[in-house]
Length: 393
Image: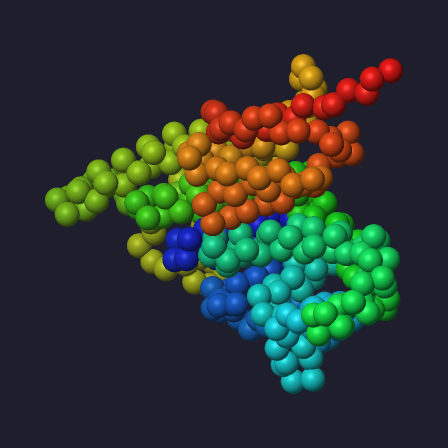
């Protein structure tokens, strides 16, 4: 049964309120629920008008909150992982910053937040974990970290261990740099296994769902469309969209009538773009959502039916199929224009770039030596075809 719900959206669309309402609904069902903020601009304490911080705080029956602090996690819970990354990166000449007596590679601090979410889920303490994520751009950077890092780690280990032992003397003489030593490679292998398990957890639709929050405004609609495309590129299961702050009808104001017409156009566009997802409309309330009672009202009134935590999701992404003379790989990229998608074959990987996002996908062994013959975008999917060489008997 699904246990992790990742709530994200453009900044300012009310994703924290929606995440909080999810948590309150879950707790009301008697499920032991943890509401986690993975946004450095934490405001769970503000919305519930209580104290929250870097350690789990129980705020009601079956309901606890946690505001993740990646630097605190780095120091207290994952010092060995941080050290192994810092040692490896330092030996490779990458910039490593110092925070107190700890070291951090800029941009990787959110990895510790993901690892903490994984550990909380695997502890079995909570039935559901609701994650209030940062705005979509940061969330996408966060969610692609495990796959990106595991790809790099895979290139170093286990073959990399042998290569570094052979090449280290040459690297010191010719390039004036130190390659990772054996201890660093061992630590790297352990990190690799953690990253693989983290990927499996976050991309498993039986465990994790990503939910998008938006408002009926042009810039928000466009960012939500792009986010959905990129989330599919990285194979994250998105199951529903919440359209927030919809103006009420019959206010008797020409000004408000004009805005309602504008909103109606964007709502229609959103419902067309996300027709394969469950869409929930949330009205614009006259008062801000603050305090447990206000959040409880939102959870009862606006989050849809009793199947909130069990909504359908597509799972036909990253599919290999046998075709005449070889194989095809199909990846869903809804909304992607053919001219925005670039495909680069590289030995046993394929790089897929859509605008400023790129994913490297390791290919199965059956495609070793295969030649990419075509790549086309059609009906929201990218299909890459490979010709497999036959052995003469």
